[in-house]
Every structure is written in structure tokens, then in C-alpha cells.
Image 1 (cartoon, one colour):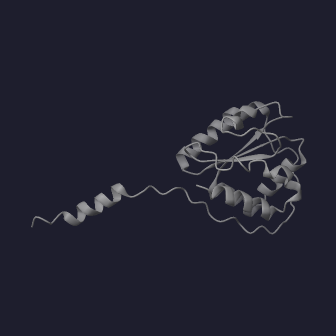
Image 2: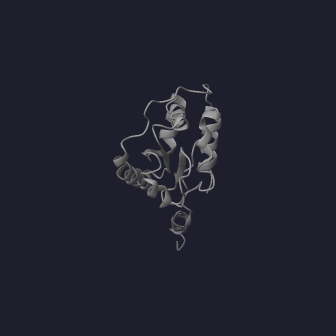
Image 3: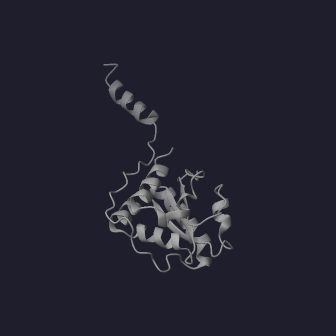
Length: 169
């Protein structure tokens, strides 16, 4: 009778010591439209940036999903085409399931630059996309500017690149 509670104690012990699993992103969707239409003005007002960024970071901590921070300007053709990719139904659904998405207007490289710098990235081209974990780590500081030529990329290449970044640990 001494061992009556042993199985329950062992099970509780295993649960208590089991590692907490990280958020696992779903695979990138298959995108049928290789080159969507550009969005006219995808970025909100410049003064919205800090509040929107902090709100996305807070949502990330609550949901466990990483932040996808898209830094750009409404004057930028690559930014507008990237926004078009993000608005494709399959991509929009995938992004909302896997990320806390925030778009941040950097004007003509004269606003909100400090938000990216606070995560180790200096914006030298737009769009610059950062993937930031709920604990504040930037997963793609080495490739954040790779979407600077988004208009030369297919929509599939864009989502595959983002999925690759999100898969880093």
C-alpha cells in the first residue's frame, strides 16, 4: 500500500519537469498569385508607430506568437507590393494564425527608426521585416532587409522567406 500514490506522483513530476514547448508556426501556404497588386497606402500614420509596436509586443506575450513587424513607407513600391502579398487571402490567414502583425511607417527614413534599433537592426532599406519572439529576441537580424527588393520576388518566395525566419529558434 505504500506505493498507491506513486504513479500519480511520477506523472506530476514528469509534467512539472517537461520543457515548455515554443510556439510552432504552421508551414507557409501555397500562394497561387505570384505578383499581387500593390496596396496604395499600407502604412498607418507615422505617430502611430510606437503605440502599435508596443501593443504588438504585448499581444505576442499573451498569445505566444512572434511579432512580424513590417517597417516601410507608403512611397516605397517594394513596401506596397509586400502589402499586396500580405493581403492575399491565404497569406493573410497564415499571417494571422502565426504572427502578431504590425506595420510601422518610417516616413523617408526619418521616423520610428529607433523601434527597429531597439531590437538590434538598423533600417537601411525598406521594407524591413523583423520577426520578434514573445521574449523579445529578433530571429532574423541578419536577413531583415532581404525584402528590400520584394517587387522582384514572387509571393511564394516572400512567404517562404518569412516562414524560414519564423522557424529559427
